[in-house]
Length: 397
Image (cartoon, rainbow, N blue to C red; front, top):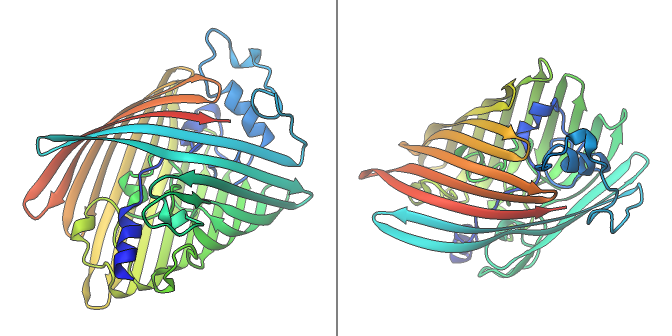
């Protein structure tokens, strides 16, 4: 069983979530439910969100957003949609180069190949995502092939909405409400808290409010039933509250506590140093602050800082932390220069990362992105440097 679980953990591949852009605060958007079916953002777009993705996000090549007449439906209007149905397609392919200890490796990655659908009838709504990954993605896998080639469903949930899409009561497999919903899923604040939108979704009920000046959500975590060994499933809660002090600045507080009979091995940074893997009576906590700030003009700052606490039977309690600071500069609509600094202390070791990224929404529904990532990972022998270049093409419609 343990060998199978280790395969499950090791084979998880990096993947970047689609349509999660906290920098949209540059356009005055402090809330998420107008554009996304999920009131906390990410994933399937509403009809309004599809219109904004055509007018506000891509490079318009000489046009202004006011000149854009958004097409209804999908595939540039080729497929019309009834008012009660939302559909989406997200495909993200990547090529990764990593240089470490004088050696360079190359890897092509099928990050996301998902079809998304949502329905709305009066107060009722539901959403489901279904995709395929040739390797990895086991924590979201509907089929049980530990070596890869699985059908995956990152999200499937249903609920009721009230107060003109401000109050939501939901249940199913959902992203954990916590911190920034940023696309850099392997950033320390997402990987260390296990709140990324790649495969860290959990099952349970959630209540969310997305109103003027404030948005909040809390979810009872009832375990990831796609983990075939129930002793490794986590139970607890996750939630946030974020206040918008203007349409340019927000500040939020997040909190997460989970318990499992046995601890999953850490994924990513310091995984090989994890003293908690497979230890009984496992507790994980993360508590922190996050903020979105449209400084002015084309500049947006995103920040998050989290306290990390982990304990298990027979292991000293570990206190750590993760921090993330990102500046997004968009000199022309659709072209983003992104500067990110991050730090992580975990299991007694310090880790640092610096990113320089260029994200170009060259056309409607098409994003080209390149990330240059320098990191220093804490080891018993000192900091181990590495340099990665990740090129991506993302088609989302």
